[in-house]
Amino acid sequence: MPKIKTHRGAAKRFSLTGTGRVKRAKAFASHILTSKSSKRKRNMRRSAVADKTNEAALKRLLPYL
Image (cartoon, rainbow, N blue to C red):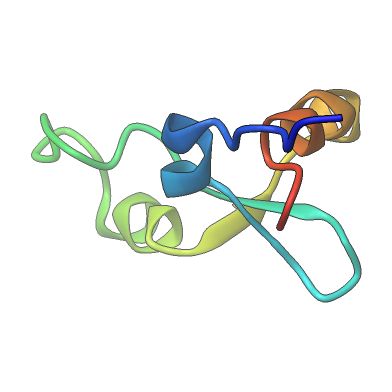
């Protein structure tokens, strides 16, 4: 059986936490920031955990993480 290739786009965007959940960055933080409040922009700097419904699909893309 050959080795499974890691999806390189997913590898750059997601990582696993110690408990095995998938960690992701928040969206909408790159441009048009003048209309967003400081609180909203500050909270977008934090990482978030991917939804449980997407977890299995993401783990298939990242077999060796």
